[in-house]
Length: 167
Image (cartoon, rainbow, N blue to C red; front, side, top):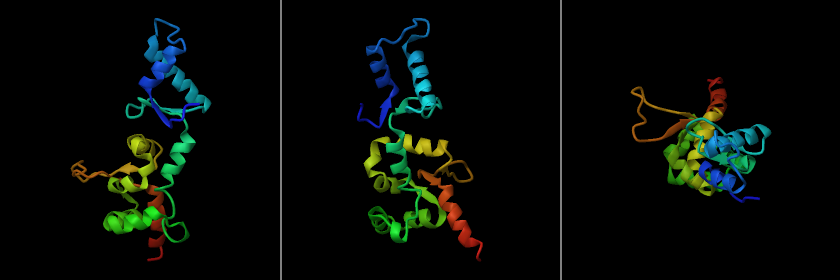
């Protein structure tokens, strides 16, 4: 079994060609490989999406990658569930940390600490969070992010909105 969590489609093509693909000269290696990945995705054996932002990577072990990474962000960050990362971030980046906790706004500066174990997969994880509606990119009224990448995490916002009902 491959120990990698993610693999590039180019690496999959190399493995596929070693295993006898392409079978059809008409389709070619690229199309057969992507069809195979789509089929394995439908079977639940791996995760592969044809969206342009995700089409060049396959997640071989989605549960091992996505759940630990996503729950570093989407969780209760206070009290019993306060992590070492939370304590560090509240000191290193207090404004950005407060924005996440109080407003559900995730600045990517926080991901360097929260996703330190997933750094090589950061771009894929962010794209998957967007695809699944777990985060939404935020821009100012001109459509510019002003050099910062900030995302709204709706599940954290919902919790904060319930506190506003009491006001």
